[in-house]
Length: 160
Image 1 (spheres, helix red, strand yellow):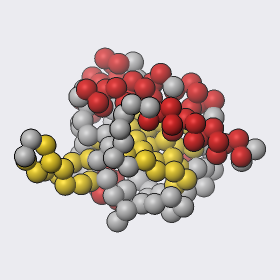
Image 2 (cartoon, rainbow, N blue to C red):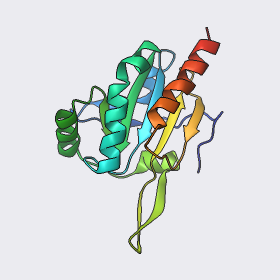
Image 3 (cartoon, rainbow, N blue to C red):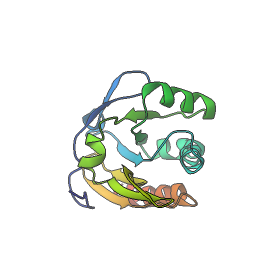
Image 4 (cartoon, rainbow, N blue to C red):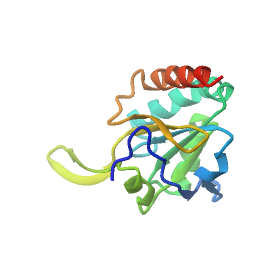
């Protein structure tokens, strides 16, 4: 299934880098959620994307938004990635790719002639009611965080 703008975001509960469960419902009625799915910790594009979110973290927080990253990496890889790059947000572990499948981002990918299943870089902006208000699929990293922040500003300011 593919999640589209205007749909209710699939609920989830995943462990983070500290082994604590984080659920979408934790933010219901309170905050926007910027949920970004990325292929793998410590790879060049994923590092750039995570660091771009890190650099804009305060701007997102000022707009009542929480940032959550999701990949199939384990707790140890997430901890190392967070510590190395000073990431101020949680990274969630989707080892069995159940949440990635629920959001329609677990896809057949091709690289150097090989096919395999993996996460397609995708970001969802979810409002406090749990509705997906914006989605970015097959994200190109350059400029993505700025676009997401601009979109959140527009939506948050229209809601005031």
